[in-house]
Image 1 (cartoon, one colour):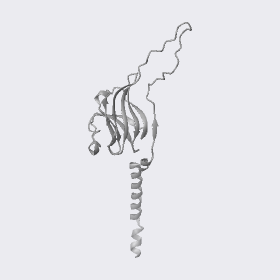
Image 2 (cartoon, helix red, strand yellow):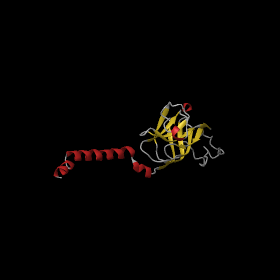
Image 3 (cartoon, helix red, strand yellow):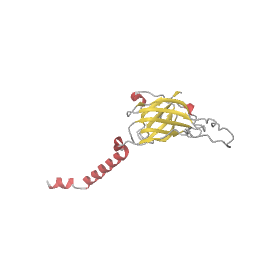
Image 4 (cartoon, one colour):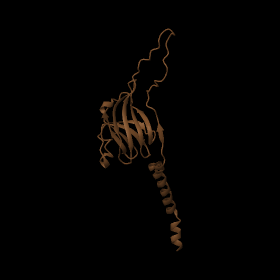
Length: 190
């Protein structure tokens, strides 16, 4: 009996405990399960929308005031509805050209699960329903527009300079840690 007790308290038990604690720590870091219960809501306005309620002012009091010349505002080029893949996902996606010629991808009324290392990708992949669509977005051309700002709300992602949006047909909420789409939208011309 004394021999069994000595084996259970020896260096093997300590090594197994160290490995187990290290494994649990790594698993918590890698999967970040607490994010499933944490929501982050971000509400951003579409950039470049000008408040048109400002009064017009004339240069001199003798001249009648003229309304200002209309400034070209944002122009929606394409849009689509998000469908669910790995996690329930809903909302709309818009590809918008701003007055200055830059482009943004706008997520409106996004509602998805939070997760580790979520990104917004502009891709050339077709959007497929169900599990068939979970892993297709990294097979072709894609541009990462950055980390997902929040798993709920409406937010904007600027396309990098030199990216021609006409070469892309879909947007994915991509989990870079596990190489899987949380949800995606096919972009149809507006």
